[in-house]
Image (cartoon, rainbow, N blue to C red; front, side):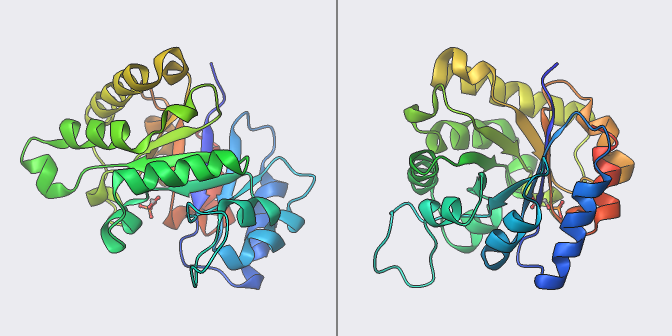
Length: 245
Ligand code: PGA
């Protein structure tokens, strides 16, 4: 069985002192078979990469701009993240799709930028509660998969993250059957879009993953790992999740 990929998304949390948590994650990993990543705010990427150098923990960004450089005040390019020591980048998170109007086409352009810079993208998809209640969860998620993945991904390392918007930061989680239903649909769409390369990419689950539910979620069919928000901020919680991987 392929190693699970478990990635922490710190969102807009963390000053320099929080690097102690990252160090504690690296020193507490033990014999985990999982691939582990932490995505701090952009201000901490370089310092975290230095702090974790020589450990198996990968560092990532939470977003990037599609262009290499230019007059884009406040933005960060994939090349800049890679230059700072990042190996991963989260793209198309629902907080960016909803808060910044990011479309599938824009996410696909960012994925191409990540590949150009040698970063491994983690592409997020997920339905809102209204979409689920309208019976449209599978249609919305597979549509996002199709629209957000450029053909250039075939043969490259990447992962998908299914994150139901209503489960993010709420303490609510789908049932295991609901997770398995969506992951199966995502897998079929990945294969349809990318061919055999789509059969290998891990499909992560994200949304209120915590130590108490991680083992059950991570052992569900087609769950190749987890994208963890709130519970990745404290090393003890994140290590508790990794214990379930
Ligand atoms: P949460 O966030 O674990 O705090 O629900 C997950 C995410 O947004 O990636």
